Every structure is written in structure tokens, then in C-alpha cells.
Length: 142
Image 1 (cartoon, one colour):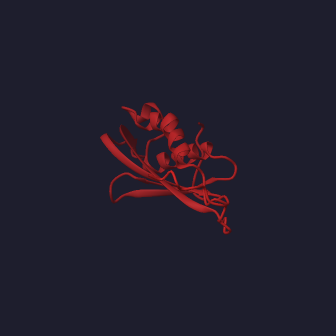
Image 2 (tube, one colour):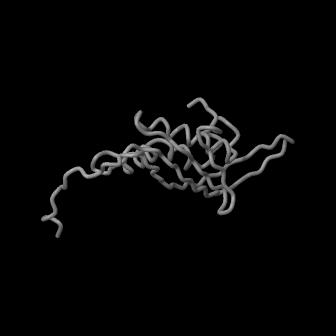
Image 3 (cartoon, one colour):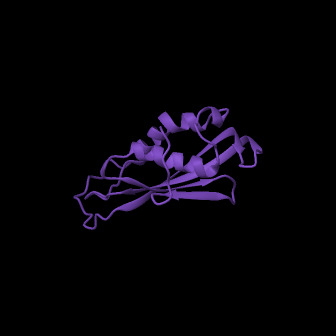
């Protein structure tokens, strides 16, 4: 049906970086600890997050490959987040703030030097989320 369509000449004269947004979800059980010694258990808890990646655009109007980023996520991070007990996979208190920072740092490892993570927004519920960016991200040992 599209066999007659031929590759065009490079046409993107702008070539300014763009923000690419990818969304993912994971479901897990975890225990969140609070300073007063109490904790909250979350069972079969569904999280949703969006990662925004600043990417250069080439002369054909292409940024980084969405599918490559998705594959890196599924090969590595998804296996840790989609775990029966999140606390057994991550070496910190599994608050939404800490998990978002960990996701930010993990995605940063997947990118080449021309692209960078702009932000990660992690939804703990439909109406509660946290956004992590370069200014408020903190490091974990990976």
C-alpha cells in the first residue's frame, strides 16, 4: 500500500532539542516507613510515571528512538519495579519521592551523551504525584 513512498531529503532546518515523553506503569507491594516508627503497607499498588527526555533532533526530524528507551526499561528497571515486594529490590525507603529519583537516575544511564532526562513524574495515585528533575534529584547507589 505504501511501497510507492520514497525517502525524502533532509528537511528539518530547526534541529532544536525537543522533549520526548514516555509513560510506564508498574504494580508492586511495598512498605513505606515514617519517622515516628510507623509504616504503611501498600498491596498490589499500581504506579504510573512519565519520563521526559530532552533529545536533539536530526536533519530528518528524528529524536532518540522511543523503542530503544522502552526496551532498556523493560530489560532492566521494569524487572526491579514490577516485583512482588519492592522493598526487597530497592535499597531505600520506598516513598514516591525516592522511587521517582531512582527512576530518574536509572533512565539517565540508558541515554547517550546527546540526550538527557529532563524530569520524571511518578503518580502514587491518580491525584498524587511527585516530579523529579535535575535540580531536586538525589543519587542512589545503582
